[in-house]
Image (cartoon, rainbow, N blue to C red; front, side, top):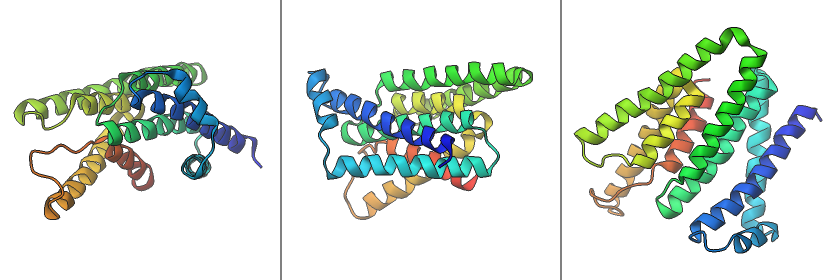
Length: 221
């Protein structure tokens, strides 16, 4: 097996357990880290399915990126982002909150990969900075304006998450936003049609941002 595939699988498994611990700790109100740590090593069907999902995601994502001529660093950058984003999606689904801690993790990871990219390809430093800045500020400007015009139309956690993802996607953040809002709209229409939600009820966007990200890779990249 390709050594780079093993790197991706190892990252997926380690990320799953680390983020599972954080998820359990966060959803329990941060009461006890030990209570969140011990279940991570207690395997069950759901957790096994989660590990398999992460591994499949890692392998398929590596194959996809390799087909498109991407190097291992780029693969790991986006895979790391997807692993953290999957945890954010689950927490937002369960608790309707997007933890700032995980947003900081995403920012830190992006900065680490940016430093690596700058060392490997110094000619693209300016281009990368422009892309990152454009992606982040475009999301902030558009979504804050949307929140002002249509009061509470989107949560601040969602706005911050989009802005952070703008650091990863640059100009292509527009595609991610389109697919995310499209998925949210379709789900919201479904809930309204079957009277499972009222118009004033909010829908957590985290899962749909994750889905929109996957669709962006499949349909655009």
